Amino acid sequence: MSPIPASPDAQYNTRILRPLVAWVSAEHGSAKVSELVPAASIDPASLDRDRWISQEQFERFLEGVRALVPDDEAFKQACVFRIAEAYGPMRYLLWASSPASVYAQAEKTYSLVSTIGAARIVSSSRTALHVQFASDKAISRLNCLVRQAQTAALPTLWGLPPATLRETQCIAHGDERCEYHLRWFERRRWYPSVLGATVGAVLAAIAARLQLDPALSAAALPALGAAIGFGLEMHRTNAANVAMGIEQTEALRLLAEEEAGARHELLELHMRQRSWDAIIEHDAAERAHLIKKVVERIDRKQKARDSRLQAVSHDLRSPLAVVRLGLEQLAPQVRKLADDDAAIVEELRVSIERMGQLLRELMQVTSAPTAARQLTPQPVEIDGLCERLRRRARAMVHGRDIRANAFRTREAPDSIEIDPLLVDRITDNLLSNAAKYTERGSIVIEVDGVPGFLIIKVSDSGRGIAPEHIERAFRPGATDESARMEDSYGLGLSVVVQLLAQIGGHLDVMSKPDVGTTFWAYLPTKAKSPSATMRAREAEPTDDAAAKVVRIRDDAKGS
Image (cartoon, rainbow, N blue to C red):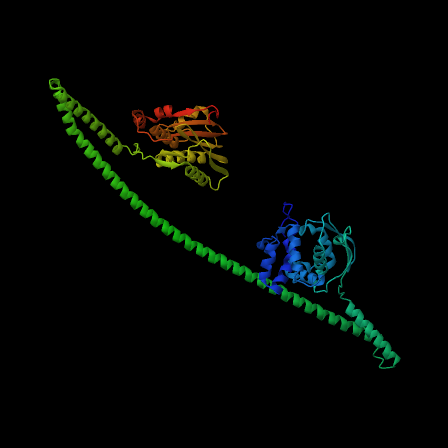
């Protein structure tokens, strides 16, 4: 029996309904059961287990079954249909007791089948019972009929006729309580012997009156009758025991078959799972091998391209140096030239310097894998961006005790012109840090705006950063153990700083240990041509870029 749930709607155990469900299925088919159960708002799976339902669900199901029978007596018969099956293996334990003791135990354990009302035995004997049922809730007549039918059917578990039940009061009729008087038959083993002895004594008296054979004495015939009665009782008892043994053996056989079937299903499931795992592992290995080959091929091509670009850019520097040297040697002669010719020479000098700068940038790109890439500004819709941020945040904290959400304020612009990949890199690093350092609580993304800037605010309820460690949080992942701080957010924030530096944005931060951290990333709403200052920021150390881009807040003012 399942434990009593704490929910106030857990008022009746579905075990009570099993005989009714079996009757409907046998008389009207399983389709009718499938119709009645949802109509009562009952989960079909709960009928096969010890589950609890509300009184309203219980009453609605009873009403559905009552509509299928002509009268209350037929309804009571349906309530005890194959009732022995509802008790399961427990009925074999009941045979070691008597109906009277089981009724007494049922009074004490009534709460295991219903949390509404309570039963009380007023008086009892070996074959009779006076019981009262009280409830502080209104109960329908159908509810009372179910209780009456299943109470009276209890002796049938011993192979006896149902108990005779006389109802004197009923809550459904307006009485204060329900009151029943039950009486049942219980065979006494000495009845046949006494009956046989009595019949023998009567025959002995008749024989004496008729003056028959003296051997038929008053003692012999009663003894013979008692012996015959005892023999018949032993035969009946033995037959009952044999029938009970057969039933128990059949029940054990069915249980063994069910267990064997379940074990077989589990074994097949295990084999299917192993086969599926092998397929997945093989597929994953093939994909990993293909990815490795693609990566190696891309890496080889990348290295070949970089090597070729480095060689070309290096080789171009030599003739360019010769041209620059020749121009410097001709400088004294330039002053003697006409103004137009001097302007041409000056333009030549500027072009040589520009070419030198281009070669230096080319060498930087081919030599440094993290060098700044060429930005490709495109219109970015803010509604779509906000939705993508919400999905990414929720994916990062999936399965954890963290709430993630994103919303847009009215001040946010409808769209901005920016490199989408750059926005993704900035937001992914901020969200990744928030998810990594938040064990439980929430992550909130707010998309806001001020004139000229889109603001992406990321707030978390994580561990926070101590004031003395905030500046260190924007350094790249430290290789030295003394520089690797526990509260540092590692490489991600240094990447954010460098990317914001490229586009003229900035980053605000506010954090408090054990409370959380908030970042405000300011992104320009219009793409601008890279200025000399921005180009300088691309090459400057992270600490210098952080000093110009990052602002530490003491409160949420201006958020």
